[in-house]
Length: 251
Image 1: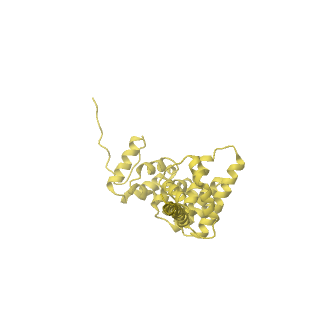
Image 2 (image 1 turned 90 degrees about the horizontal axis):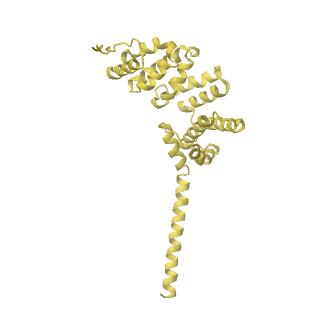
Image 3 (image 1 turned 120 degrees about the vertical axis):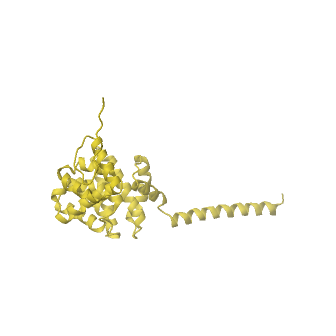
């Protein structure tokens, strides 16, 4: 092989390496938080990750929070990662590490709300952090109220928010109570009967009559599925417009 051909071959190889390097660099600039957003998206759908996975994307979460600009999808994913880490490590005895994580989460929420002040998820997380660290207070309840005010009909947030709101129901103002009751009925109407039943039997039990009264306008199928689920759990309540299950007599 001639020297010219060898040189040409090496030139093509070098060009290929440079092209790949440029492509990777460009991709990282255009999609700097791809892994973080992938994990955050799956957390939002209810998936739980091992701490090692969350810690693997935590540096990206910190970068997204510290960035001067507002990359809302990345910041939202950063909050999901921080929240799940806090939930997983909440029972650890290393208070210094837990306090740092709590501080990081508070910083993430401050950045989140400054970028997206009308995002109900961020306000709900702010409420959750405040209650987790300092208990129920007027300040915490204002955060919960902001979550409902900015997103009263956010189904995926309701999956968690409704239970927390029912736990402090007597402390809520009348308008916010109405929103919480409506949210409960919407959970049943959307087919989340397992979750709604747990909310009723748990924190919602003291106000069960108000909750059940809201089911009068829920679709018949889901209303009766809800009634049967409660009956199977040994919980007997009167649900508006729900057909009673036929009695079975055994010999």
